[in-house]
Image (cartoon, rainbow, N blue to C red):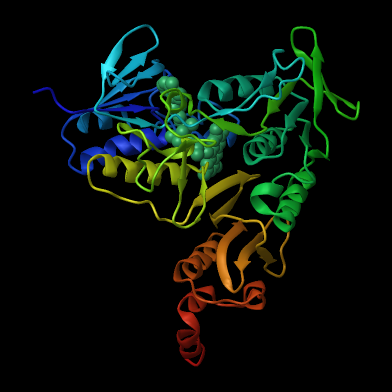
Length: 414
Ligand SMILES: Cc1cc2nc3c(=O)[nH]c(=O)nc-3n(C[C@H](O)[C@H](O)[C@H](O)COP(=O)(O)OP(=O)(O)OC[C@H]3O[C@@H](n4cnc5c(N)ncnc54)[C@H](O)[C@@H]3O)c2cc1C
């Protein structure tokens, strides 16, 4: 009898976490992880946080880890299509593999602007180690750098470049950078942080075209303003790499639609990580979450489920983002129609912010405030009622608050 074969398409954090979890949950068949990239699976977050692309390259696991867990890695290999009738995974180049179950952990690709000149040398996106290597080599030659899109990755790259003394301009189409993920008060603080470090921030504008000979020389904005540029990073969002699922008719809605265990509506297909549109129990609505920690936990839960131990990742979503030597950490998701409370004394260098729906905390973020963020996470997990006033007051003991009103009275009376 041939062994049962699980094929994982996408060997980044969701895919390799799933592979390891399959083994840890008793799956004894063959596991093959396929990735288009040539490198041993590596961490993406350092790519936008460090000037030296070589230093930023950190494998998720050492090579031996895969052999120890009986995981076959097929690198530099792109999956071309899934053969639904024969249940085979077809590779570019013509080979194919049989698969009893396929996990799609294909992540996302950077959106392009689709404007003239985008193909010029010096116009980059940042997703892979190779992208980071090219950007780091370009910035080592000096600026100016123009970052299109005020998202986390673009702003992290802006901070790295400013720290190296490069002239940086960020062009954001909306009212403020980071407005979507953080809301106005926190986005305003983060924007000021960058401005205080010398980043020029232009809002309410986007790009008409890039000009230059073979390499970019100028960014022309919709207003007609021209910005000199030696390097451009386009960070205007991503699209889910869900083509393989769509082609076999699995339901996709800006990502591969799955149940809480990662199962799609196609009998042999599963999905995990950034590509999966699922209902996270701590969020409550269907969507993709583009955080490293979530992709790792989600991959592990789906891997366990594929090993027939149904598991749900219910950990509150967590992410971090580093700027000028300080870290922004956030638990939960900032949602529209939710009140944002800043703790008194907030500055662009150090702040804590709380998102409240009614009298329940739904998210917390802090820059250079790891202890406050951890303590507020306990409040979030406990689901106890809290007031905006107590959260805004820096003297409030958040740990005591997380133990609920009765315990708070006891602890405050000694
Ligand atoms: C520069 C950068 C910085 C980041 N910083 C942070 C951070 O500070 N904090 C945070 O929480 N998150 C951060 N993220 C987001 C985080 O890295 C992602 O959430 C995470 O990588 C998602 O993991 P994934 O395994 O789902 O997909 P991905 O990491 O996108 O990997 C998908 C893999 O699938 C492969 N693939 C796709 N299609 C095919 C195919 N047809 N055949 C073979 N292989 C295929 C790709 O080559 C890729 O390796 C950052 C992301 C980037 C790019």
